[in-house]
Length: 153
Length: 142
Picture 1 (cartoon, one colour):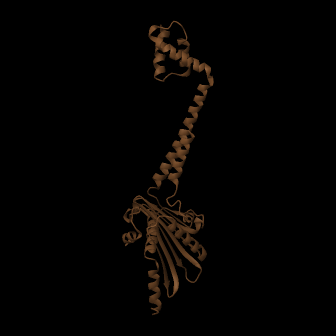
Picture 2 (cartoon, each protein chain N blue to C red; picture 1 turned 30 degrees about the horizontal axis):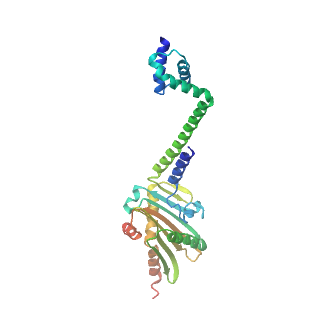
Picture 3 (cartoon, rainbow over the protein chains, first blue to last red; picture 1 turned 30 degrees about the vertical axis):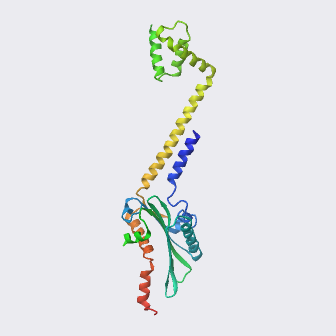
């Protein structure tokens, strides 16, 4: 009987686990790095995303200090490295010789016909040491970020 | 005569699994006698054995009763967990929500606009617009 109860509890726990569980950046989404009151979180799931060939979208947007922005980038890069990655893309833009933003995009998982992507972007906010950071987690049948970019056009 | 009719009915109900513990005890008492009608005799051995078992372990029935009670409670709890989880996931199937600095927003248009803005900014690297504005303001440095 205990075995049956354990089995059902594990099943319930498994079902309730969030989609990006297992990723290092999950701590950010769950508010364990920056309080959720200090960020804008967007969560969309279902038919609405069908036109982008996605099934789940979750993003957070927040303003942090330079060091925190760097730490978040390291987490995203580590997730790209730890998981099956079909390719990562890191780009750094400068405006008039000054750094303006950093963008990092990677595939973090592939489960059957479902692909999972992680994107990070940090914008410099004027001459301050603050950065506006956006992290997006997406999953769905879309094959690559390039294909997703085409769908967004 | 009436008693025999009742025993026959109870015996049938026993094999159908519909008897109460009291009725089963009545059957044990009956089949313990010597003058059992011919047609009921084949059941004698079974009921005598069952009666012996019942007297050997009087707590077994109670224990089984407790076991069944716990089984029902566990089944109800599991049903609640599985049902609750299923409902939770069903509701999340078409989730569309934003938390703007801790404030929950469920307005579909606001959420989707925020999503689209973020996705576009990410895929377009975001800086193009700013770069264009700066270049227009100060001209190319080349």
